[in-house]
Image 1 (tube, helix red, strand yellow):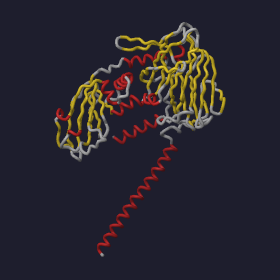
Image 2 (cartoon, helix red, strand yellow):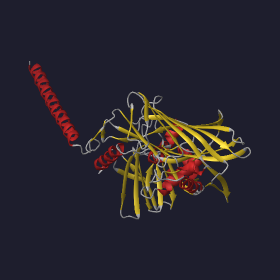
Image 3 (cartoon, helix red, strand yellow):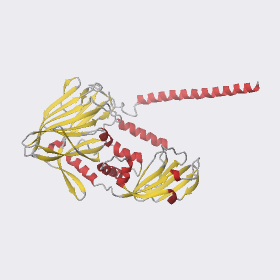
Image 4 (cartoon, rainbow, N blue to C red):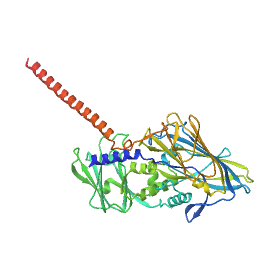
Length: 467
């Protein structure tokens, strides 16, 4: 069963590598904040005073190497707007949505400036929508508002065993029974874990950990946290070195049970989280109906390693009387990855929907600075002009009718191969099979040779003893 699970996980991982996964939202839109009851709401608005005279958008691939996880080139992306306010000086709240992982967002922090002065912003989070390319600004704000209403004050139950306090056993085994209305998070480090269910309503989780020879580098406790319905049954068994049951512990004597708020439990996993990130983490945990049981690492990957919608909320004072206000937003953008092309094709998207809320939109200039590894811009839905070996440009008026899309590649004419990115690639399977057979043959001969040498050594020792 374990081998099957590992195989399926590897298959899922391999498949995920060949799917274009990253889309970037890169236009600011006007909005307002409204506090209703205890919740914050972000509402889209139209602003007839503010217009965008021009936008210069630059995708710079010369500053960053490939993203280690997605294996795609990183674009240091900068959008610079010349914004004009036809009325008097005016304070304007804006939202800038983008799609990425929280981990990447923390590593490559965004930056906003107005007339070269840095502007502070607040990030808000929501689950990435399925239809990313057609997401409107209104839908993005709606997703954020749902996260803001997360109930992070609800209380769960934390169960913990200090392994240094457990005596008379080489291993300790904790068995938990719970129903489908529970959500269980546990620390899997150093543990043997078994999961099974009698039916779709009742679940069982077994955690096993050594109680002896715990170094200062090891975690010295077993814990699991239950949110929703409490555990139906818990028992703690003593196991010998052969992992055979030799007795049972009194649960109340070896296990500390405390009530812990969901927000406090989430913060205990990673203390550098903001309140918005805690809200998002709580929603991701509770909305994942398919995962009744989650390890601590699975939960952290769900929060930080999966794509989400991030909206940068900020407020600026725009000078009036149609004076120029130079607004700049910069961030790192990773791209979609398609291994079905030789060489590999990397695709990037720029969604322009937030900009439609301004009074008007003037010219747009898009610069793409490529690098020597992927020097060509191809498959774009705008007519880019190649102005130098590693630079492409588009100049137009108004917001493009379609979302901006382009790809970069090592060749101007990559060849599509439906088997190239597939785990069922026959050529790859044959290659792997041949290598596997060679390794197996070498291993057999090595084992056989070792046996012969050992046998000869024994015969030699026997002859020497006889003489």
